[in-house]
Length: 344
Image 1 (cartoon, rainbow, N blue to C red):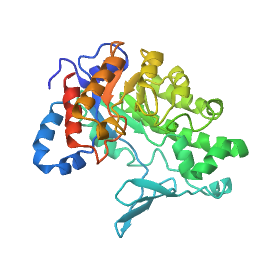
Image 2: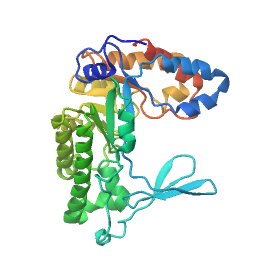
Image 3: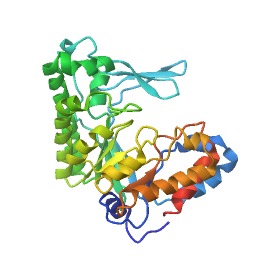
Image 4: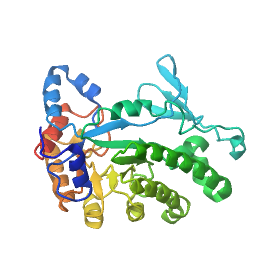
């Protein structure tokens, strides 16, 4: 489709509640899987996808990945932080943690250099084709996730209480790295920086909200301040029920919440409590409606989300509650596309 305004302008209008010309959408579908699901219908799916505007520039990441070794269908690698990973074809997961034995292991441990030659080469190539698209960069595994990838999950949950000084020192080192990456993005005049830390369980936060405010909120404030000072939007990926800390994140500058997960958070409450103060991204339920519902159920959910979150002259970016699962009926994916296309 063609639009009288650029993708960059339209995303900005949606995020800033300034009545976008059309509904921007980020749809979490693995296209390779989608095409393989029913090869005979590939062209139908491609035609639907082509009707959405090419208005957002993704892939702007500077991952600290290491060289892979593959044996018997399983790939393993160490990233630049020293964390061990494996991928058996069903998704990557952490396997080893360089500081799990204790903070003494920090002696001689090397962190990635944010200014390393070549770190932004791939991103710079992508940015050359930016045109008027909305450029969304990433600082993936921002803080909490990076901490537990270094220390181990249980250890990291206990560290603030058992070894606060060492914990704070490690936390601040990670924040300093992130700030340097943000500076590089701002130099490249991106429109947004996308952070990620999964703080929610299916119901509730992973730690006491007051403790989160004590140990983590000041760090996020530093990161958000740097982005906002550079004139960019703050997006954040937060899986699970994070309702308890959304007011704090909004107060320090969060613009876009990704994703909206209706089986973890009440969408009506989110709209009532935060509508007009936050832009919501996602919400089509990949755990329930997309897998178990009918095509009409999917369409109704899309229409409800657009109406619910779009009441404030913007404030909604269409999408799913997370990645669409392989067991999802293709007809439901098509129904979702068709429903969102009504707002293009």
